[in-house]
Length: 219
Length: 329
Image (cartoon, rainbow over all chains, first blue to last red; front, side, top):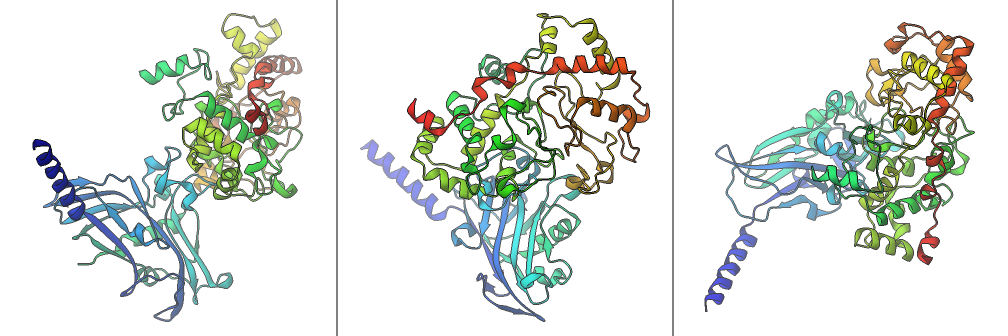
């Protein structure tokens, strides 16, 4: 009998946790719509599309009344526009929170600590092989305002050294639904000038400065 | 403490007492013979390159202390020529950065660079994983090494690191003198003193390199216009600086300098005595010029030759091993 009760209690605990386990959704968006890759967007005086979007979220911490209630078990999480399951970070437990803090990108210690698996596997295409370091944020596509060959733009934002540090922190009051407003980047960056950033550089640092403002709580 | 004991007792990696503590973290995972052998087979297998023609050993030959002799600039796939001389590979556990400009920050990540470089192996890690996965023999080797036959970036790179960590050069005449097993000749003794007075601040013992970046006064080759460390840091103070190479095994690793511009030791020494070009980032050591008589040059070279490690260069455990040989064993 005792065993049944114990089993029942465990089952209930499991149920509660799996049903109410905290999750955060990072939804890549373009204006009011969810992002669709390779869709043509008419934005201001530009015609553009996004063919690739990936970004790292790391050191995710949850707060309630300004005290830490939970630190995510996952060191770094890769959001990849081709895989909608990657938009969700699931914690294995339930807790109440009203604010989150996280980094866009991979911290410098991880950058110098050798090889990792899973989201940090260099096979994910978010690692520079010719100069060690993770790409924190990657956005590629075409824009009618971009003068490069076939109007292609490449924003590969990375760099962990103090002179070109592109890791950025975000703090958001949220209940768990966050949108990544990619349209905002096209407002902030003059794509006719800055269309090819693919190494740790001043240009990458300037774009990194704009990234936190893309993240909005979506209540 | 535990890891220290582990390293000391490890027969794959047993440096002499006067070598400092390695920088590489040997804990995850510790060296073991299956991983080392897998790394060795991968090192010699051209499967890592796009058209299966170039292996790591194509430019890092064991008989040249894992450097590329005869070529000033190293060449790779489709007969393309790179822009630097392939550096020798040994005593890697004590190095914080890799490549002449320190572009790579960890031994585990190093192999990704030549695998992906269009003029080296011209491939990428996903392609390599796919090809290895198609090989039954490799799946077995990965299973033996990692108790898991899933081939991944991390397993490939860890295996390559493990093999390369065993490339320790510590059995030169210099080392034998250091351990009291042999003695220097009078000429070598003079040369050792000349080395201490003129070379030791950058090529410091026991590795004969401080593994820092220095500008040693080489005039810029206008066909390459290579700014070295500056390419990575974009810091003006790093212009024309390159990672100091070790003097160990120097008879096996010619030609010399990052672009292989000098074929002989004599040319190298003449550069230091009469060829230094002043520039803003020139290493301070050259504020005082190096003056050597012709007899002193001979003495210096006789000491430098005691840094050749024949046991290392001809060590069978480091040599070519084919995947099929492994499968038969």
